Length: 105
Length: 118
Picture (tube, each protein chain N blue to C red):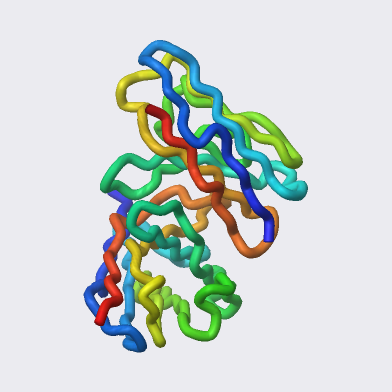
């Protein structure tokens, strides 16, 4: 199965700063990667799909990049509501897999 | 408003069974595949199963294959997850999420809790 490794595990920043989250795949997945945000007690929310496409109603401060095995989620000018857990997910091959998550605090 | 209505969670003893349901509201599952994803307490997301739009082709995580069965009823716009031979490590919040035009899980249910305990 394709293993997704997210780094860092925890990212400590302040509002107004920029966050850079990484997701590395154990083999090439082209751009079959998504990013999700999850807040405590809530379901995940799709942020980015196909590596760089913002989902509906997602603010422009969220952006994704990468292809093959290395992917990045960038959050410009952090807002207080952005502090949450972030997961990457691949559908380049079965089984679907998620990264272990990055906590943005 | 598009939403997914989930039901069927609860407490069951090891070896028991539960059937989870996920109903689409404000849209239809017709033409879309649907995933089940779970999250154990304090843990990350784990993909469980997927059924293609036709309802015939299905995929399962190794951890549940042979014990869980996913099914799709387009007439009722509902997807089910039949869970048999439940183990303590199946305890989690289970989410359903369709694979729609983005190719990814762009809408999620609120989740239903499964507790497996003697």
